[in-house]
Length: 307
Image (cartoon, rainbow, N blue to C red):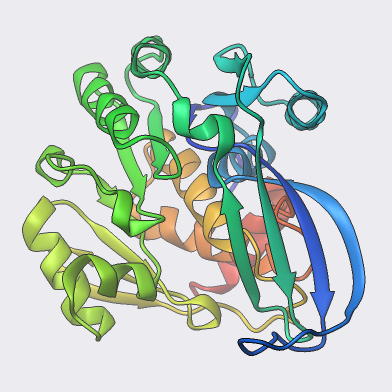
């Protein structure tokens, strides 16, 4: 597959965070303290991570989000601008701090994350609606749920009105607003999120239940085991290529961002999912939440998944 000349348009609605990342040999059990082997500041938020990944894959990306009027917000926005993300639709709240997260990463690359939502929790509906409706028909709208449920529903409704491909990354699943599934989004939960949304412990059963609720494709991400795609043709598993994982933080965000780009280009769902799997696999080979690969690297690995 070769890269397309025209850059697709993607609008991402979600959170921006500043991350404090702690590397540990293993996660502590309740009541225990463990030593960090390293620590650093990074940038996160599922919306911002996915927007960065989409820009690296090769899209014109607008981000609808909110930060505080503080140094943390200024640093986060400078990082996004440096990645080529359009931040004109990012609000600055004068009273609330920029969202932040503490991320623990163990020696095998798994993570545990605690989030303080901050200004993300005050993202206005009208800012979201205006940004989504400003995208040309034929693009994609990707939404994560670290924002008010009202803003999520406003974004999804606007995307449907604008004729955009609608992808919802249902994390965290307890913030799924009533009425969203009826809009028929493509859902991209991980296995834990799929179970939380349906009560089904098996990925196939959870995907079937979500497909029945949305009548749209469902893609359950399964970490190093790839993804399960459920559409009208039934279930399809796309395996992840073997890689040496250093940090899985943000891998689902990278998958969603790459998927949104491919769908905005008009690619078929399975081809788009393969690109997402390849991009996510490459992202876990480096530390941090903003490790999405280039288009060329993702396409080369995605081609190997068809062989």
